[in-house]
Length: 68
Image 1 (cartoon, one colour):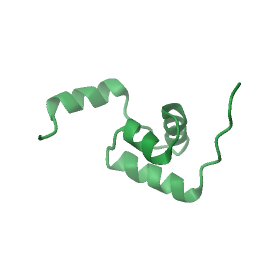
Image 2 (cartoon, helix red, strand yellow):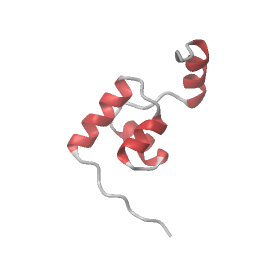
Image 3 (cartoon, helix red, strand yellow):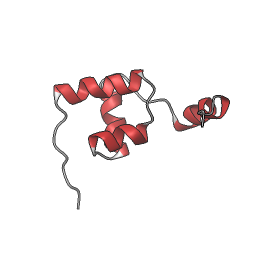
Image 4 (cartoon, one colour):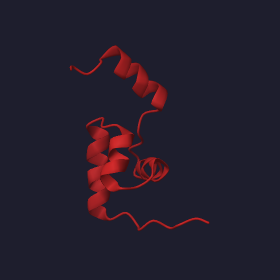
């Protein structure tokens, strides 16, 4: 049984675009919107601002680990 999520508002779309532009992790974005990873990824693609593939993100992260 699937559950339909509420539609994306114009404000949410703008926030999503900003998150993608700032290279924020899709996991953090999904948590911020309280939506599934699949929903966030699909909406970003729909807006023409897709998230990088996870393999690309991992490579970038491994090359530049966060400072602790």
